[in-house]
Image 1 (cartoon, rainbow, N blue to C red):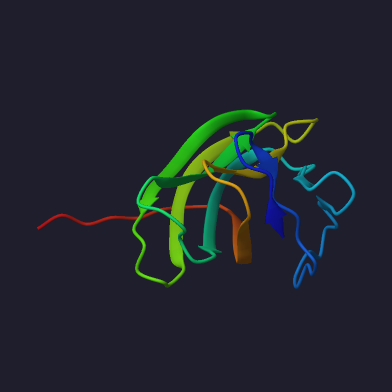
Image 2 (image 1 turned 30 degrees about the horizontal axis):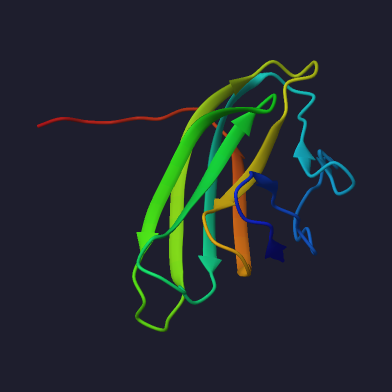
Length: 130
């Protein structure tokens, strides 16, 4: 996916591997669950080769189109792509809340080579301190 520089762009997905509830909409690039609860949202993005030392890029996880997680990276000109990843726990109400992903690049002609997004409904976290 080639990204236009200077503005947030929706990350599109060519393939949805597992979506048994059919909550991912490939037309709007949104995840809209119909069951309320906490969801663990994870994303990993591989960007193309940097073209300058000021080639800043960020990836955003958004709830109802408002950013709630921002992962930022200033890449160097090493001639290799760089990955950005992050995760965030968010409550979705099951009656219209949605999650989408965007990317921003500061210079022209940057590509998103691949994206992996994972969304899990949290049921229980248990921790023991010794």
